[in-house]
Amino acid sequence: MMQNNYYETLKQIQGLNEKASKHANKIAECMRYKDDNSYIPNIAGTNRVGPKGMKTLVEKTIYKEQEKLTEIYEKINELNKSVIEPVTENRAKLGGCRVHAIMNNKGGTGKSTITTSLAYTLSENGYKVLLIDTDSQASATQLLNIFDEDSEGNNLNTLDDLYEKMLNDIGNFDWEDIKNVIDDPNNKPRYYDYAREKRYLNFDLIPAGISMLINEVRLSRHNDGIYYLHTLIELIKKNRDYDFILIDCPPSLGTLSLNSLMAAESVIVPISLSVMVLRSTRNLIKTVSDIQALAMKQRNIKHKGILGMVKNEYTKNRRINISLNQIVDELFPIPCFDTAIPVRAACAQMEYSRMLFAQDKSIIREGFWQRLAQEIVDEDIRNRDLEPKIIDKVKWDGR
Ligand SMILES: Nc1ncnc2c1ncn2[C@@H]1O[C@H](COP(=O)(O)OP(=O)(O)OP(=O)(O)O)[C@@H](O)[C@H]1O
Ligand SMILES: [Mg+2]
Image 1 (tube, helix red, strand yellow):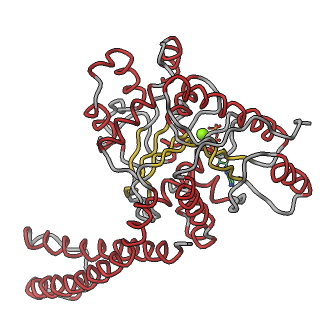
Image 2 (cartoon, rainbow, N blue to C red; image 1 turned 90 degrees about the vertical axis):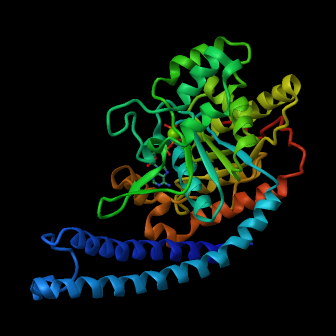
């Protein structure tokens, strides 16, 4: 079942919230005048009144704006009621937190774009989402407008610090350590609207540290080095009721990626239709099966393999796409989600606009992020009690 209506409703709520903040600002302006009569509030009509008239104007404005605010909040309440139910229903059907690694060892296939856009879209639908950035390039972290220092120049609290703590003293590592990172206000995903105002997004983040490569070497020397993220996520699941944890992976199959494979219940593989990408994806499919079989043997951790592939930067009309599409559809053992992500200028622009691809108004109207998010929820519900699919062969010989 598509939830387009809910998504539309959530957009309406967001719009109303923005309207409400404008009215609240006007009230704040009036209150400032009440504290200090020499201040000229930024409201309509101040140039037409003298000092006496100003007092009346301010009182009238407060009254009028408060009425508008009440009206808006009533509307928001009504709309909230209409969206809460279905998410609650789906949440029960999901049966707990679903953990996905967005992975392809080939660079630039759209992992960070897809992870951030899905986190946004799912959270806008009312799901509770945590994004974990495990790539030392920190692309997802930066797309969420968080950079390696906070506004005072202090270093951020990142996944790297958590790995460091675990490596130094796993016995004393607990939920409080993770909570300090997730709840750190400097780590709250944000965007900037057209007036260049900072606004917060509705999901949580464990940012990547840019020096994670050093701890990757330390992890690789450690006996249990590929299970640290698994331990960390198990602690999170015990303490917070997220519906989804999405892990953005680096373009490699090093220890950091192996950690993601062990930690994720299943994998989402972004692909673009190029021979190089399909070759590396062919190898990835086999690796995912091998590694997850190892986790089952060593730790009795049950994985569900690959949830699905997402065709990214998709253009229907290119002739080469027709034959590559055929390879994917007929010779790969993993189905693609029906929704493909088209090439859009809004995506490249997001690095400058400081908003997410999925937040762009024209992109929202196209609806592909919403459809993909819904397909993933549906697939997760369908897959919940399925045994993992063991994949031993990709039919395409890679030529
Ligand atoms: N659908 C799209 N339309 C247009 N540009 C896109 C699209 N998807 C991704 N891009 C662009 O391609 C580049 C790579 O995307 P992204 O960083 O998401 O890939 P990645 O797989 O995370 O890369 P890496 O392997 O380096 O982590 C970015 O500049 C992004 O803006
Ligand atoms: Mg990336």
